[in-house]
Amino acid sequence: MALFFKQQNSKGPWLGLFFKNELVSLRRLAGYGNDMSYTNEDGAMLTVDGQPLKRSLATALRRQKIRALLLISPLLIFVLITFLFPIGSMLFRSVENHIVAEILPDTVVALATWDGKSGELPDEAIYAAFAGDIQRAAITKSHTRVGLRLNYEKSGSASLFKKTARQAKKWDLETDAPFKEKLIAAHKGWGEVEIWQTLKTHSSRYTAGYFLNAVDMRKTQDGPEFQPENRQILITLFQRTLIMSLLITFACISLGYPVAWLLANLPRRQSNLLMILVLLPFWTSLLVRTSAWKVMLQQQGVINDILVALGMIEETGRLVMINNQFGTIVAMTHILLPFMILPMYSVMQTIQPTYLQAAKSLGATNWTAFWRVYFPQSVPGIGAGSILVFILSIGYYITPEIVGGNKGVFISNRIAYHIFQSMNWGLAAALGTILLAIVLILYWAYDKVVGIDNVKLGG
Image (tube, rainbow, N blue to C red):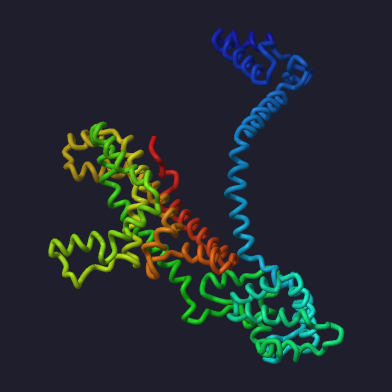
C-alpha cells in the first residue's frame, strides 16, 4: 500500500492525496473509521478485521438500502392496502363466478352431461339433483344469491328461485320422487329450456360473461351474442364518456390558459388576489357547487331569467341547459378548471421574460414571440393539466348524476348503479376494468406521441 501511494505521489502529490482521501471515504462508508486497509496474498484489499473491502462496502450499502426501505415502508403499506388490493379485488370480481357452482354443486355436475342445444328438457336425474340442491339452499337461505346471479342473465330468475325454495323445504328427497313434475308444479319456469340453458352457461367458477355484458353482449349456449337493441346502452355510455371528457379537457385548456398566463405575469399583489379566486372553489363543497349550477341552468333559473330580461330570448323559448350533455360539460368544466390552471401556472412562472424580450429585439411581433418562444415552453404544463383533468373527468359520477339527466351521465354512473342498486358487482368490476384499460391505453398513446417526460409541474 505504501508503494502504491509512493508511485502515485511520484506523479504528483495532489494525485496521491486524492487516492488516499478516496480510500478513507470508502472505509468510512464501510464503518471502519480512518484506519488504512491491508492486502492479502492475492492483492485483494482487506479491512482491519480481515474482511474483503468489497464485501464490507456491499454490506454497508445493503444496510443503507434496508434503512431507507424501513423509512418508506408505512407509505408502501398504505398504497398496497388502499390502492393495489382494491384494484386486484376489482380485477378478480370481474371474472369470478363461484355462486352457482357452490350453491348448486350436484346440479352443475349433472348438467355437464346434458346437451343444452338439443332443445329438450333435462332428464329426471338432473331434476333430482337440483331438488336436493335447492332444498339445502333454502335451509341455509342461500337460494336468493343464486337467483339474483341468474337474474342478471335472465329476468325472472330471482322470483323463480324464491318460489321454488319455499316449496322445496316441504319435500322428502327419498319418497317424493319424481321431481320433474314437482319442480314444474312449483313454478312453470322449470318446464322451459331457457332457464336450464342459462343455469348451465353460467355454472363455471370463472367467466367472461361480465365483460361481454359490459360491451352489450351476452354469453349463450352458442357463444357470445349481442344484447337486444333495447338493452344496448353501455357502449354508448363509454363513447359519451370519452367524447365529453375530451370536450371538458379542451374547454379547461381554453379557459385556463389565459388565467394561468395572467397569474404568471401580473405583479405579485394582483396575481395573489387572482390566485385566491382560482382556489376559492376548493373551499366550497362539490355538492354545493353542482347544485348551484342546477339552479342557474334550469329553464326557470338565473341564466334564462337574465336572457329573458335582456330580450335575447322569448319567455316561451327558454333554453334547455340542464339534464343534458351541455349542463354536464359546463358544470364539470367549472369544477375541474383549477386542476388545469395550477399545473400550467407552475410551468409558466419558470419561463423567463427575457426570452420574449430577446425575440422582440430580433424583430419578432408580439404574436410571433408568444407562439414561437413562449407557448412551446408552456406545453409541458398543458400536458400535465390535460392528463389530470381528463382522468378526473372520466371517473366523475356525482356531477353528471345531478345535472346530466339521462343524456349527460357517464359510464361511472352506471358503475355506481350496479354497485349500490342492482348489486351486480361483477358487471361493475368489469366496467371499471375496461375503464382502467382505456385510461392506460390513452396514457400510453400520449406517452408515444408527446412523451411523458415532457410533462412537468414546474421547476
